[in-house]
Image (tube, helix red, strand yellow):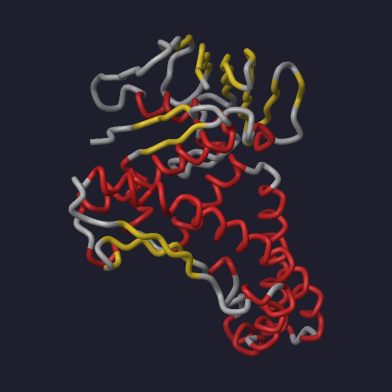
Length: 311
């Protein structure tokens, strides 16, 4: 995949204009706060994902502007294509002149892998960051996973709302049966997708890390799932039922794929707990490069690599 031209208007601190990268490696350099990361962020949005910096859509417009627009010409799928993103409180998009129901529908048409210093949180922070890494990467491989993930989060939100209503307002606990079933069905699909993805990138990530460390260290990945998932929807539903009183007391669902984790180990030890800053950076780079390798294997095309202050 190749970016031919990017046009921006009202986006972050980028002035209205065009960026035409060369066909190979492009190096952006300049002083701090000049917009280098903003440019990479603009390209990344065409994957259909949210900002890799955690910004809400409404925060992507320039100061004093109510709206912004981005357009990009790129080569993918053996043809020239063009996509447009408009931002006004939320993102809308069109691809090759056809409007899309959501900007997330761009997923699978333009693929990229991004690394920024903020991604060190993938190792340093809690499980949420590692779940987000898996989900974001898998959505590019299988865009249909977006709907599965949304279904799970909707069911989780409904179940959590009901748990609070039972605790505070005395709602009927039997009403949880419906949401237990829906959450279990979607949850098993989410967990299966995540586990399969981790299995696929484990080998490439280990090889890449060995190369980065000169063969002195090993990196291993392990998906740590909730109890009950391996037994299918019925087993996960039984787990929700078993933890019902605990969940009511807490006011939220205390077990399920939303609590799963990707365990990253270096030399048999937790990279989060015992890894040095250099080891953690190398581990994140290995994960990102393995993500790119798998994208290339599945799509048949090299994804665009966006590397921000990589060293």
